Image (cartoon, rainbow, N blue to C red; front, side):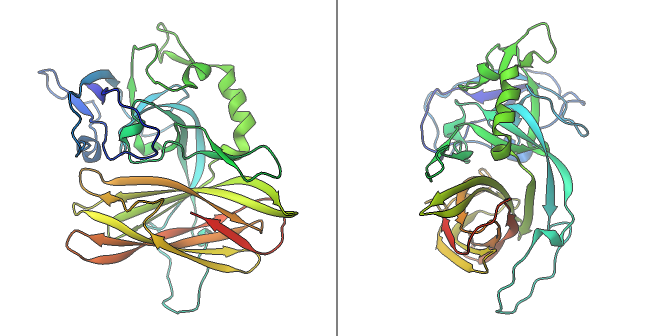
Length: 360
């Protein structure tokens, strides 16, 4: 069984693209092997609504059996189960997953604001992976490919910079495959991190530069907590990352980025219309942020394109806080509902003064 990816050659610097890479399974007049892993309905349904002219599908590798136990090693090639892009594993993270679909907490209907906390749940360990995304697929996936951001190295600067084509992928979203191509992933860092040895299985060997890069950026890359909750078959996953502290007019400002993924588990088309955030600071302030859509978009989640992922940032003049909220969702029949965003903590190791500032 072979994996195929879209090789249309288009490229865009936009974070989002309405078209998706088509992924197909070439049977080549043979029966499905009983041992072969089947791609989920999400991957099989990934076809662009904006058809690309003269699109060509080429075989990119052969699927391997997915791992039910254990972790994938650096150099493992894969297709993303939901977003369909080609990628390679850099290194694993062992995160704490707080799944409110398993342990639902009692919520109050009181108008008095409450501060939900992930500490109400017992997190279970779950493997995630830092990965490189193939640049050829970036224009066709509904996820930000410049989502992993860093603060400027200058202590007094709030400037952000990004490394394009980095992502975090859960173990269940990895569809592993092998390839004989010595350059199976197109990314500026690929040849810095891996060498190809055709006599070795798997053929990709991690170089010392990969370990050095991980050690240098560990504090800003580290994934520790993942939060998940489903409302009316719309699953929201939130992952916060601490980015560091900078001085602004002699006041420390603490920065976090957070990744949000929405996945429509139903057969009905949904559209995100509004966002409503509550941000609590250790200083005791509670801020409300409302607005249309997210990152300038009102994404549609359909059976053909069921998922959307984006990242944003928040800053506090306090060393820790909490965030939670809702997305206002419109269903295809005109029905509206509020989809809960699981609460997550904003944690750092330093003290600061009260106040808050947010950005989305």
